[in-house]
Image (cartoon, rainbow, N blue to C red; front, side, top):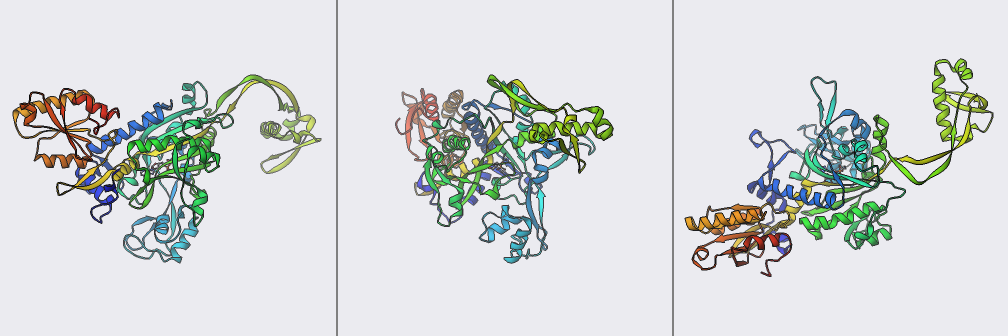
Length: 591
Ligand code: GAP
């Protein structure tokens, strides 16, 4: 990244300038503008859709293909029982406070964080947030009216719908792509031949009815996630840490965040694991995979870190979690979360559904185990418990498995509808027998790298935004990495001239044939055409001029975006040379 990045020519924050540029050049803009627009929904224009697609492809290459994981594509609407099981129906809430004057809704925790020294208001209980609002006399961010005394409510973020006519089958737009993977686990494990570890990825839309969507595509109501659910046997599976041990990272662990003098730590993944800074080796592994990926797509590493979640910040399912964060105009934003979700999700779906969410783990050698069983005397239980006799049998079976010692005395105590009953041991048929078993059913644990694609796109654009001066004129350009830039080459005939245009058409065809994304532009003077492509972030522009058609050897001018340096190259190997630069095999400076 050039220094021009940090030194913006005006005092206007880069975010504001970027949002203007994004709209002007077709990166992103608020949707349904013809109807006044609606908060939290954005359309990616031609450049944005292409950039986003390139980021998704780069993610797929790294996290699905290179890691040997499977990719699926599940529906975005799922029936209610899925979210009962996952806990989203009960607990996927944000804190809502409504202004008594203007009626605007706000996230109560954001109002607190933005105006007090509290940094993690999300983790406070609702009554405490109400107290803080009253104590600090906090006001409505929209109209300035006092919010003290207003009730703070838990607001569920899921969009509800009905599946089919009527309201007999409620459904929800998925708030995370992850659930689409978890519910299909019983089939996915078959594709993995019932062998752990294995990973499943999905790139797709997620929906959250955010109380106050803000900062353009950073917090929206419909966004794209790229998630990997990696299923492991926590007793046996270990990550290939040696592959990422030397990756340098900037970490902001909980201890440093809680310490007044605490600061970020520069270290390597290997050292961070050795020193216990990152306790979970699987999470550490994926942080090590993610860092170079972010760098490759164009996130500025001087404005990138991993921050550990504070305990109150963690989602209901997570044992440990680190976020990848990027710095945007002095604020850190979360681009991804790396969580150990333990066996939470699969256990819940096993409990709520009728399928099996376990994997059968075959032992190397069959094992002999002791098994406690009961064979109750029904001629005793029947008259004693009547219709509840079968329930008593189930209780005794469960107790035998759980607590053999309960059968050591003369009587076994069980509880039935809140009442205690003692059953003589000789009537339970309790015995402990030896059994040969080939394996056991285990519930895998899940390690989840969860990326927000829109936030990566935003960060890449923000970090690429640059200003400088060329030939005494101010210039804005996007220093996008060739791997993700939506357009790789702009081709211009110098003037409106049949001969120049014919060569330009051939050049465009050649470059497209070589798999490069090309735009043809013949409107306005050449300087304006360069500026347009600079603002779009096109790495190279090719100009066909009179030398091209007059000289013996057919050559064109190739201009590099960041340095504006120009070189004359032969048309014959232009496509090959530019394709080699795009693939990282050649460098423009060295031509
Ligand atoms: N499956 C885990 C999960 O969904 P999350 O931290 O809630 O975790 C993962 O979301 C990522 O999705 C975030 O790091 C962020 O990049 C992105 N994300 C979440 N809410 C978003 C929103 N309202 N708008 C845009 N991106 C969002």
